[in-house]
Length: 330
Image 1 (cartoon, rainbow, N blue to C red):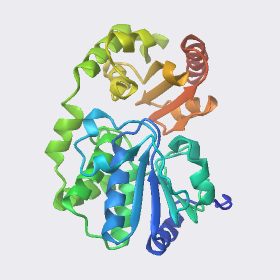
Image 2: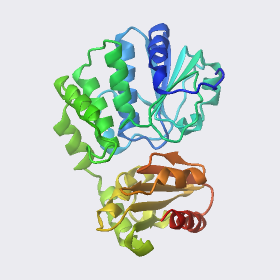
Image 3: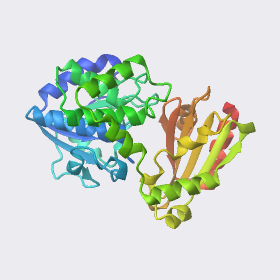
């Protein structure tokens, strides 16, 4: 991996196009605990690269959530196991605010001909040789759609479905403030390309494993309102996961429920991940509070209205520290 002093971000689009056209072998990855944007973008790009006659290896350090298993090509994702090949012309990381977010891929990064970073997080490291980072974009899917349009790529219906999943999930079905007219026009283009929107909405938002439903119930039981009604706080311990026969992937969307309570501006979910020796914290906001600033204080990051962090501190300890920081924001 070369130097990372590029100041940029949106202006690097031509460099991304050049890297894709020039490269022959590609390693693609997204962040740990993958979501619809990470997986949707990876699958779409891998499909497009293969149609261009290139070799594309797609990797996820963590399992693919059950509600994303329907996506076209998902079985081709290598989960947890890196390839025997270590040298690629291009390493393409999507929605990774830092290279460590993709997992333990340091060896692959070091041997890459070029590292391309495509992201929309507000807090990030310009770690790539090429950094195409646009914090005002609704999703990485929006950036990938623009990139492929720039290249003159005509999407297949499967590729459009993957990108639609990305933008729909990262905007909360076009609910978050990051949704713009450009976002909606892009989504309309994906529908015209054959994206199966109804199928995506049903399988992603209206279908949950029993374990996920039970875990949601436990999280709502644990929900408390703080800061004069402005904050909704909930937690999930290792015992909660065990009782519900649930896993980390079953926490998707739980943090959003706190914002349904009238008057709340911020929702925070604390959850133990004992198998990884850490505590994960997820934030959502709908008011003036920039939760990415709070996450960054503890080594995390994200967007103004959606952020997260991982901490080696016990749940009770990190909870006290985060809530103290949140109190200052209010």
